[in-house]
Image 1 (cartoon, one colour):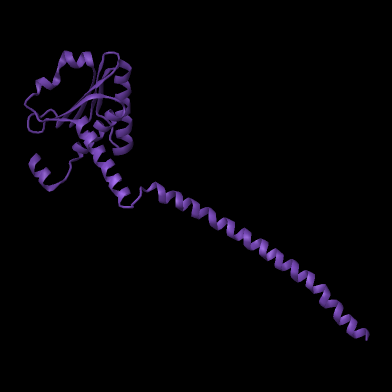
Image 2 (tube, helix red, strand yellow):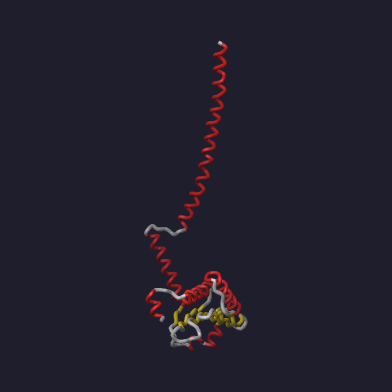
Length: 199
């Protein structure tokens, strides 16, 4: 089943979810992020995501950040959140994806990855850092080819928007000058017909 999905190039919603969770944990300084692919091995769920938090408060912060950002980005609520930050182990359960956030002590004590040592595992840190390197190289290549990041054209557009505001002001002053010339010229033309009628 996993092979057919890979051949078609389609990513399942569960894989999108687990990758987003990995990126959130990585971004918020979680450590030793490991994804276990249980699709062929367990009816419990499709993916376990294991990660280490640096402290008990960090456990709670990671769990809350995952809950909030997954809801914002994918509109998915967890089915259940289990454990407490003080216990050093929290689980954010999305059904087919279970995120285990543990302190180093709890991770060493329970060693969940060794319970599933036959399961394919993905080191999420290596995957994310490889992805970031590819993006950086692509940006450098574009810069070398003369294609600049989207930020530079945005600043040019902002400058272009300001320029039209200055031009009408210049037209108004030119219009005022011509009006002043006309008004100065009109009294002179009125005097000359009066002189002619006097003669």
